[in-house]
Length: 140
Image (tube, rainbow, N blue to C red):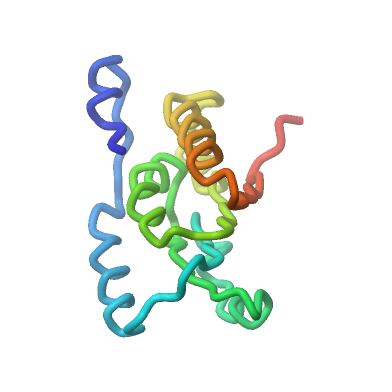
């Protein structure tokens, strides 16, 4: 799923993307691991999860893959969602948004709408799985 054509059609301002090549690092890690676990718990989002070095120990016996990337913002995580869904995770723990604040992202931006639509698509297509979204900001 690519959101860029839809945003161009709507005339939305594109936000900068810093992590265009993050999948190259993930591919290298996958090759180093050898056989990937089936139906893993997937950590995805920004550095709060990326820095969780011993997550696999805490979630044992669930096999765990960490694909969070530090400094990522919601729109960057959305752009890579289709890539991480290729792991066919049983559970996704998603944390993103705190870096959006540094960019002064507007509330209910097209990225948030897209993230919500993507989360709904994940829920519909992976109804037997679980998605836990950790909110980064509070509306209060």
